[in-house]
Image 1 (spheres, rainbow, N blue to C red):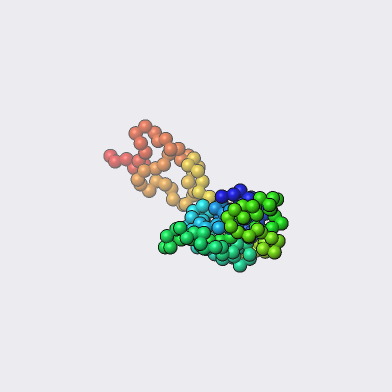
Image 2 (image 1 turned 90 degrees about the horizontal axis):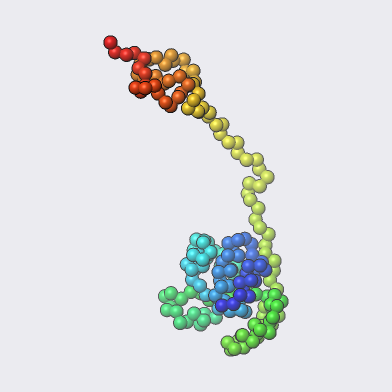
Length: 190
């Protein structure tokens, strides 16, 4: 409903990885300018962010435990039937981030809410450090040796056979174009 939460989620939110960022941006799309009343179903968030619904559920839990989001006023989604009703979250955008807090507080006042203060929205802790790969610093596994098969123009490898055991013979050099009449038979019938 407002561009401010989207900009915060896109550029300034202390997220751990791209999955958290894209979920937060998808949530911010439906939030008011103060970050409240973001309610999209987990299925909608998963479709928007191109993630599995279980991944969305895990990421919502971790963002809530770190204080990026919090459960909001569930009455905001009361018009949706109960069996379809999603959970309402608030994006906890810090007070200090807003460039024009008076405009945000005026909108909150029109909606019948108290103005935001520094105590309501303190600064957020930085994102925890990204986990390193478990195989970081370890040598790569050696690739299996490639078996050279040759090309269609090379003579076949020497297998100890004369190639004249019967049947048809391949033209010398492995040419795919046979002489007129097809393949040569080394033992023609009388």
